[in-house]
Each structure stands twice: as structure tokens, then as C-alpha cells.
Image (cartoon, rainbow, N blue to C red):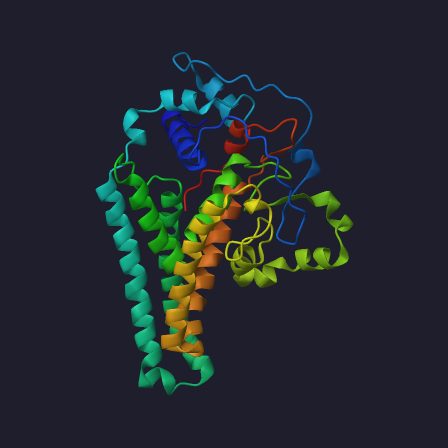
Length: 350
């Protein structure tokens, strides 16, 4: 049995990372559901919770014992966010803007420094005198390092999307937007506003069998019923892992386009929201275009896009581990609540 402090730490992580910008207890989506694709993550039919279930949250925390907490962590009786907040010290939710910006600056510097060194190597006479295989072996460690630094920066942008880089009443919104545009739109070539939109909808529908965003589900026993092309690509999906993030952002599978605005994530969104998202796309396109123009296609691929695929690997790996466990569950319309879905997040040490 985990002790209470460890469990409460996990609860804090669950609350802070799943609340999006709202503590909406239940989200009734009217948007179209995603059809199963080769990017779906499979789950056993027995792990799909159907039918009516009880969702009476714990109303007090003063008398909670280990059995209460164990039941909570099993998702038998998940508490409301307000209940969790009462369990945790107030400083859990305090955000120091200066500290956040310090970490953001360190990660950005790590990307700029490692990528600049990688570019210097690619431009060197030593590198250009090597055969292709030698060139690949020479830059591979630097590409992995740069890609990891990009992944760290992506995580900063993730927190900016949740509005937790700064909670300043006066400047917080602008600081989060600026950090998000720099870390996501520029460095990670991930349009910040469109990503934040689909990510919020993911949290509001977390572990819903049909309505989840970003992380799509399918029942493993039904894999043979998929269309032949989808079934074939599903079974070889690991072979195109380096390209999955591009497929997700650009082609709009399964959420809708993050570069070209179409698909279910944009249903019901205003023209103002789309124009706001277009600014993030413009930042990403301008950044990629400038680097491509100045480096040339070959160097741009080696210095920027190869590390970008490493970043994508980290993103998909961590996302997979956060959503899968031996006792993980997904829910249908008649059993889903915001709290149940949120408590299926897996808190891991890396």
C-alpha cells in the first residue's frame, strides 16, 4: 500500500494536468466521434466500462483512511476536483512565474545550443569529407540530444497550454501565450493555439471510448472488423512511428487539422478562434520556412527534422505510458464522467 503522501502527490498531478482550463465535472460533447484509424490504441473489450455506474464522490477528507484512498485510486468512487484540492496543501497550486520562466529559458537555451552545435558540425569540412554512413553516425548522438531538448521544451509549451506557466492576474494570459508560441509554434513546429484546443478537448473526454481526443481508442477484439487498408496499417504502425506526429498535426487524424483547419476539433469554433489559431500556424510556417531557406533541404532535414522526429518519439512514448496500465479502463456515454476519465491517467517516474 502506498502511503498517503505519495498517493496525494499523484492526486495533485492528476488534478493539475487533467483539469485543462476548467473543472467541468461532466462534458457532454455534441461533436462527431472519431472513426477508428491505424493510430488507435487498443484495449480489451472487458476493460470497456458500460452500463450505469455510481459516481457519488467522497464529500469529506478528514476521516479518509488507506482503504478510502485505495478505492479512490481504483476509480471505484472518484472524488470531485474540489475534494482533491482540500486534500492538498495550498502551496501545491501556487505558481511562481519567475521559476517557470527560468526553466523555460533553460530548455530553450538547450535546444538552441545543441542545434547550433549540430549545424556547425554539419557545416564542417570534417563532416563533409565523410561517406554518408559516417556522416549519419557522426550526427546521430547530437540529433538524439537535440530531439530530447526539444521534447523538454515541448513540455514547457504543454504547461503554457494549461495556463500554468504563470497565474499572474494581470500578465498571466499573455505570458502563457508568449511561452507557448516560442516553445511550441517556433521550436517544436507545433501550432500552439490549435494544439491547446485539441488538448483541452482530450482532457475533457479523457478515456472516453469514442470521444477522446489526441489518444484514440479501439477494442482489440474488433481489430479484424476494420477496413482492410486500416487493418494493414494498424499492424505495421510502429514502422512509421517517426512520422506519426506529422500525420497527427497535418492530416488531422483523428482530431482534425492543426495546420489546415478542418475536422471535428473545429466544429462549433468561432471565426475569431480560427484566426487566433492561424497566428500560431503562421509562426510555425515562418520558422520552418526561414530555417529551410537558409539551411537548404539537406541540412534542414539533418539539423531540424531528424531531431523533430526524436521529439515525436518521446511524445508518443510518454503519452502511451500515461494512458496504459494493466488495470486501465475506458468509458462509454452512460458511464463516463470527467473524474473517472481523469483518474485513468498513469503517474510514472521516468
